[in-house]
Image (tube, rainbow, N blue to C red):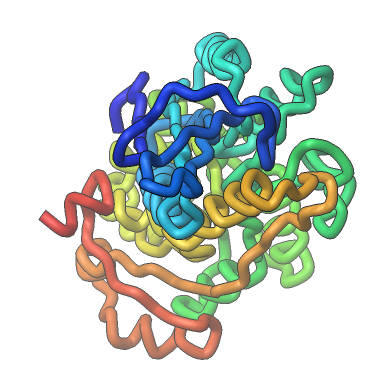
Length: 359
């Protein structure tokens, strides 16, 4: 995924430079004659600015499917989505500049992929009220992005990758009923981790299971935290949908394999990057549904304040079969243990991006 990529799609066969007096949706949209003989067909162009938080397999998967679905929706509705994409690589200054550029470019709608971007867009649109659709925000209410999932209440709505922490804990003990100590690996500064870690502690305390917390905010700190968990003698490690750990996974998964410690995580991209298990939503579908929400708001002039936040409960466990074997575990045995607790169990092998598996 290239930074500063600008993806522009024009749906009209021939564009006549004609000024129209009215628009059917947002005030920033433009309409042009399609060049038909009767002059009755036309296309409306909507400007959409997408900012991704970090270059990560799951978040990139959201963007790829979001863009593809917008293109499809544009063709089906005879409109054009002019998409500007950028990635701030977890840099707050760069993120704010990207958002400022979108506003200066007079976009009709902004898309924030991951909680930090959504929060920044919320702040930047308090006065101009440009519609914002977020994606992969684990706790929209706890992050104070919306009043409630059913009625967001302002110019923001979107899709959530809310994590059912108890389900992952159940997988840990289904695979190893004798596990006595669980490691919690996360970034304290990630809003997406707050609720999930609290839920994990509650689960473990209720079941009288010892746990150890280790945190990090950079790849180097995460590597040191992983080393510490190994030294702590944990039986398994849990990480929620934490972007910091997700980015560092390729650098730590072999540490856990060598120590024969399975790493259970909150997204399939972790498993793609070497973790034992990723459990959670289908991020490709998350991107598709985010695009459908964007299309509804722009084409049908829906008010984001009244568009419910979408959550998903697909219960998919993605197992890295290479890691499974390296840990000395039998995949079929693990699959049998997991299947009563999931809607499906998927296999994956280690790669940097999901597209790499198709090459």
